[in-house]
Image 1 (tube, rainbow, N blue to C red):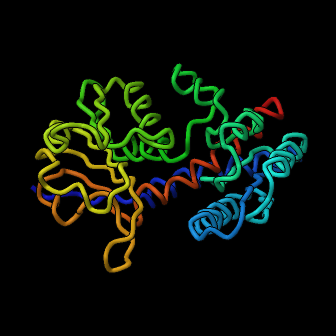
Image 2: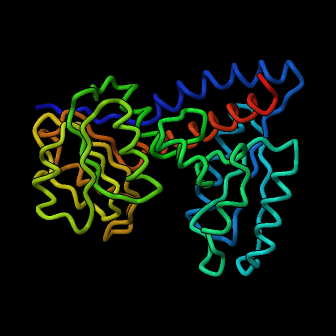
Length: 285
């Protein structure tokens, strides 16, 4: 079997193209969509994602305000910065780069961000909407990017067996709910799952989001399965890689996303889409 390596760029480009037109229409009405990105310290992963988000927003015409706080910022000062953005009518979306430093309690911060500006599903109100199937909220950007890729490449989900490796609130749990929303039969696996490879091998659609470099090899993949790799790891040679050993599944999977150039490249487009949705909602459009 020939495996189709399905890249994120065509998906991101299509979303971006549609958003450029939407922003132009908003600007003709005197409305400028604006995203605030809140970063603590100089974490390289945060800075990389921040650059990617800024570049995507620049292409689309979304303004970006960067709030950069010192690594030792107090919890109170962090929350005050969020509340200032909540009250700033020029800001439509707020992205808090996470994880936050250990001295800041995310369980407290997540209630501080205005759910109407929470474009990456930090506030529990948006999490609840996702789990209820209420499309009026904002799903986490990465799981939504997974769904956009599956839709773009016409992967059938209704009635199919999907297996999700990983149960985090950032990817595993939300993507499982979204897959169920498309009528897939979903199994969520994790580090304590017995016979993990056997469970994975039952999947028509396998989502790898477990955070272990190249763990998923050909023993995890059923012939003809679609494999979506959400992992971002560094291998023993210092190269970026996913949770899937891509070379190992070639010739077995029907489709597989690469790392890099897969899911990650779609995530910032979804973020931009959420900012524009928030902007339109806040302006009663």
